Length: 281
Image (tube, rainbow, N blue to C red; front, side):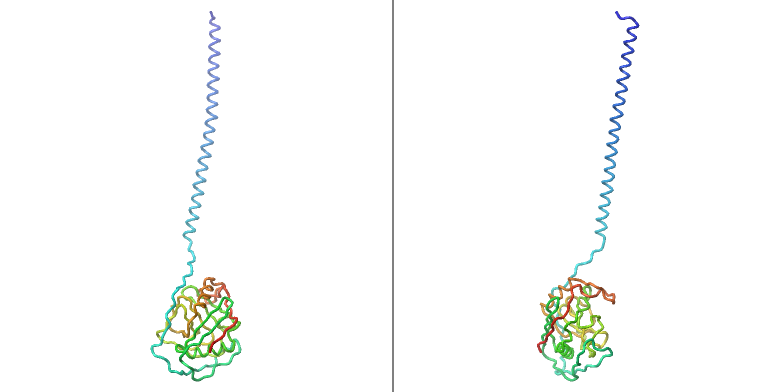
């Protein structure tokens, strides 16, 4: 039989083992708790980063959506009706060509003053670096303008010159006819407008450019699209289908160097230089 001393020692050892087991459990629980805490921190951090990144991406997408986009070029496919005079001009009609204050951009003789036909059409073939542009000039619309154009073509005035002004918004046209390429050059003479109140402008028409009433010279503009203008510019012919295809290509190429006028027009990105211009008249 165990003595009281032995029983006390056995109880002491049992208590010590219990204390050791308790301490091991506490230590183990601390390790597990630390691991769980660390895992939770990683999860929370990852979630925060995910939400922050997602928010940033959404903001970027929204910013991209809100940023105004350049509208694509809209060119009408239908030709504008060719204007008609309510009262035909006398045939022949009288024309006068006056010397202008500015010298000629290229040596050329003035057309003779006098009468010219006011009936019939004239075909013009323009070869350019961007493609062919054919014109049909209408004497019944503007006999003096047609006569001047024929005169300039026969003296090779346009060959080597480059179209200097393209419009793509509001006024959809290509302006040509200045050998200097500055928009200020002319043939050294001017003549009167051949306009009438019913004039309108649009795809497929060719008209004279001017710097005011009765200042027509050598510059003209080829309309490939919309052109809401007052009837102050002489319409004198139409553009061929082949020519419109060339103009559409140039227009879709866009504007390169902006013009000084600040009206959204400028030099075309695709150069249009006349390499050969002939007339069937």
